[in-house]
Each structure stands twice: as structure tokens, then as C-alpha cells.
Amino acid sequence: MKSHAALFLTALLAVSGSATGFASGSDLDTSSAAQPETASENPDSSPKDVKDAGENEDHKVTVSVTAQGTFVDESDFDSDIGTFKYTAFNLGLNANRRIGDSGRFSVSFDAGLINYDIEASPTAIAGDAASIGAEFDDVTTLSLTGIYADQYNDSSSWYIGGGVVSGSEDDADFGDSIDGVVLGGFIHKVNDKLDLGLGLLVRSRLDDDVLIVPVPHITYTINEFWSIESKGAGLKINYKASDSLNYGVTGEYASTTFRLNDSHSFASDGMATHRRIPVAFYAQYKANEKVAITGTIGAQFEGELEILNTSGNEVASQDLETGIFGTVSIRFRF
Image (cartoon, rainbow, N blue to C red; front, side):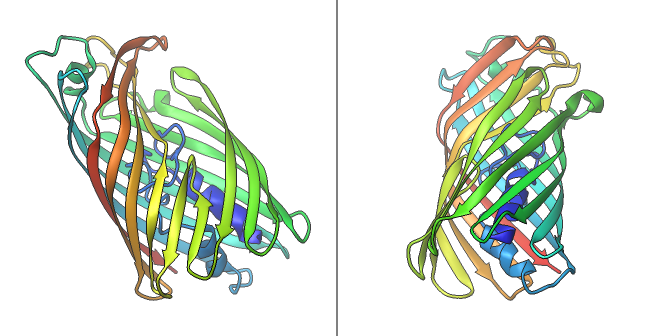
């Protein structure tokens, strides 16, 4: 339990550009392989992994580095105004250390780069989502978060954390791309198989309204092979085939928000948000205690590209059809 909360927050906050979960500009960085959002938010990050990494290390600092690539195939805008696809690359660094007898402090830094490849069709008009999106430059996402978790009693623990996240198009004003994140919550061990908890996340969102979201925590160990756990705003079902191989299915809500530069006639210095629900099959191979490789393949459902001006008013919004995606990540732990 000591490290359950620390990792849950680490995976949730360690955002990638988030550019996906928060990191890097994601509204709710969930740890999804489908997000450009964050290298730390992949199926290869789990409360069990963090616990295993720290429980036998006394008060030493445990460090992990994760590199991830996400590739999303072309999908159409619903109204046939164009096509949408992107690639994203993320690098995440996490360090955590036991504090006292039961506490643990974790710090995560993530950096990401997203390249949107959007093409407007002949039926597109100036100022719609496809036309503005076709002008997007590369997007950089950054996040720095810290989380402290501790034991309340033999069966309960709590956590609190916060940080800053940024998502911005090339040449956008970096100072106007920074959001703040604060969160906290508790986790209760119901029995040897079930942990339940609830947290609250508060995040500022550029020109949009402040985001306030309840964050549930569920970990249910069905047997020695099967387990179910919450994953940001979603769920993950895992099958442990062996000590070195895990695979399963994951799905969650994901959102990436970033500041635009002043080159867009209809949304100069505004903001863009890409929302979707990625559902994927994943497999993770642990070569040893220090190296893990994870691959995923799936589809992004209920996609949407929304663009706001500096006053927070909607300039354009368009739904996206289902898109196929894949990710590959590798994690090194020291």
C-alpha cells in the first residue's frame, strides 16, 4: 500500500505532452499507450512495479527512464473536411525515495514532441477545424510533478501532489502555455485482493474552464494470473503469463491541450484540444529487473478536435472517425 498511491499519482501526473494524461498539456493525463501524452503513463507503469522497485531499497533513490513512440494512422473528419493523423515521441524521467517508515516521495519530468499531419479536403472552408489544423506546427509538451504518499494506518494510505504542465506549438508564447495541477486522495485496502480509493484532481486549462475531476482508484487481483486496475480515467485488464511477460487490454479517456502561435488567422494565440478514447491490446516483456519493453495496438474512438480563441470561445470543433494506433516504449530502471 505504501507505494500504491505514489505510483498511481506518478503514472497519472507524469504527463507526457500529454501531450497526453496531464503532462504536456493533457487535460487528464491518463496513462495510456494511446496518448502522445506521456511516456510514464504506459502499461509498463503500475503500482505493483513501483512497489517492487522501492520496497527492498530502504531509503535509496530509485530512478527510471522511459522512451516512447506513438503512431496514429490516418482517419477522416466526420464531415469529410479532411484527414487527421499524428506521431508523438516522449521521454520521461522519474525518481522516487522512501521517506521515514512508510512515506514515499516521487518526482517526474516528461518531455514530448507531437507532429500533427492534418490535410484539409476541397470541401473544407477557412476557419474550420481541418483548415486550422492543417497549419499546426510541431507541438512540445513538458511536465514537472511531485507526489508524496504515506500510510494512514495498516489498511489505508493517502497522497497529495502537484506540479506544472505545458503544451505549446512552435513559436507560441511559452509563458501562456503553462497550467497548474493539484491533486490528492486516499486508498483503502479492503482485503488481500481489493484496494479501493478516491482522489480529486484540479487543473487550470489555458483559456478553458478549470478542470475538476474525481479520480477513482481500483485494484482487484482476481487470481495469480488475472487482475483489474484503474488507469487514469479508464481501466486496465492484465494477464500475467509469466514473471517476464504480461499482456491485456486497456482503455481510457485522453485529452491533449496546447497553446497556438500567432500564425493562425482565425485562432491567433488561441488553444487547441484533441480528445479521444484509446482502447488497446498491450504486451510487456521484462528482460530483467532493469529493462522492460511494451508494445500496444488499438483504436482511438470518439475523437474530437476543438479550437478556442484567447477569450475561451469556440472557433471550430469537429468529430473524428476511429483511428488505428500503435506504440512502442522501453523503460530502464536504475
